[in-house]
Length: 132
Image 1 (cartoon, rainbow, N blue to C red):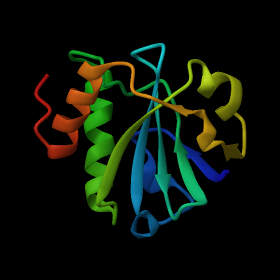
Image 2: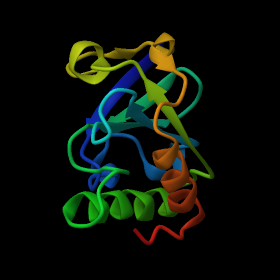
Image 3: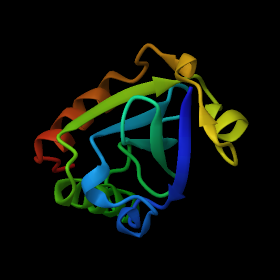
Image 4: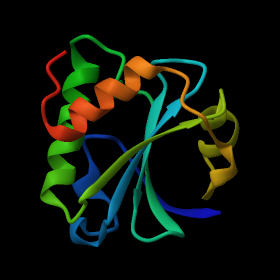
């Protein structure tokens, strides 16, 4: 289990109770059944993370606020010690049923990728060349 020690919005990572230099890895978690449901776990170590709430950023969006929020999130990660960014998929509805309002995240919720086009977009985002 991963302990969720704080919850922030995608543009508020610097307002977390955890200092930016404590973060080590970012895991974007995409709902395997809905393309627009994305949240993130910014890991301090293998057992503790700050939850970045679902609802503002999207790998599926073609423009507008969701893309800007995703880029703002990346900019915050670039200011931190995060050097590893990965994309994982979770079972459909995981955020609403198990993550929101919880103090823990169960990695057993991870499933195989279901949207290859989002995997490609993530690779471009991670490399800093998201142009969609």
